[in-house]
Amino acid sequence: MIRHTDLQNYLIRLFEQMGCPQAHAADVATLLVDAELRGIPSHGLMRVKDYYQMAKAGRINLRPQPQVVHQTPSTATVDGDNAFGPVSGLYAMRVAIDKARQSGTGWVAVRNSNHFGIAGHYAMMALEHDMIGIALTNANPLVCPTNSVSKYLGTNPIAVAIPTQEQPPFVADFATTPIARGKLALLGKKGERAPQGLLQDAEGRPTDDPDILMHGGGIMTLGGDVAHGGHKGFCITALVDIFSAVLGGANFGPFVPPQVAYLPLLDRQVGQGLGHFFGAMRIDAFRPAADFKASMDEWVATFRAAKSGAEQPPVQIPGDAERKNAERNRREGISIIPQVLADLNEVAAELGVESIDY
Image 1 (cartoon, one colour):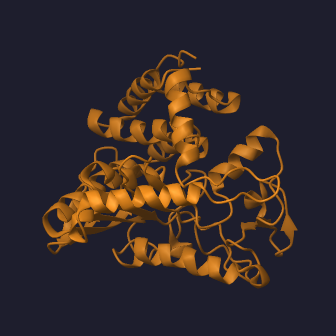
Image 2 (cartoon, helix red, strand yellow):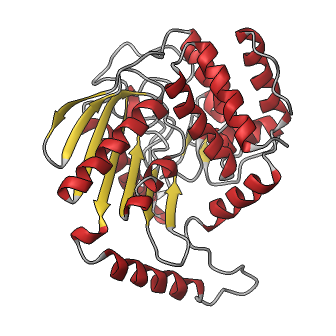
């Protein structure tokens, strides 16, 4: 086990050694550690090697200057300057919050960015300002539209954080597909199979091979086939792609640049880099914040009281599981999967940094 503060400081050293300014190294470390704390290791330490290899291949700008390139009082487009995603993402979410503070709502599209970690972190930044936070991003094309074998979409997550008064905040953070690439990679590292109904091979046949993406297969949309609502899953994932990419001028769908160095860059681009979309909404732009938060408390309490099905656990409110994980991991420390630890130490050795004290 390792304390999250020690892990944060270690990662800052690693990313500074890669060539990042201290503030940017802290941004990246913050997102990776938060993923580990919240029990989402698919977006935590296992990304360090990918990020390092991207930087080593010259596909990340290690000293970027993200900036607003177009704006109105309540909207903006940010050019991430090909930064690590957490650097451009945190910059853009702060712009969204500042605009909401002035105008009631703030909406920011980002282009020319990269993988930004867990979407929930950005959405939750709005909570302390009595705002609803929203974060979307597109991702590597690994997902096949319903009835297709063409990998044209990413796992394209959505996160929404809503403040409450006494109850824990409502935090929905989820891929718009039945499984994310990072979780598949985690299954592969553990030698486990994927649940049925999530993946298909290159011919469109169902498979439980977590490494099928490396053999021409793809992830199915949420719901899978039309009979189970897969066409609706396609709609949701497509909407995230359009908001994250088309709106701000990033690459959409199959043109999103690979976020791993071992895949070559695409010959054709229809925009700049990978895209995100952020929103912040002041509660008091709609009704007094205290009244709203009291109503949210009642909403949460109502749904917690929903009767469970036979042999089913109690209803969980979005954010419950991640919050409990974070509380436990802050108290007990973070555990690291052996293969991920080996990758982390491999990166450290290449950078001339001592192995992590774990």
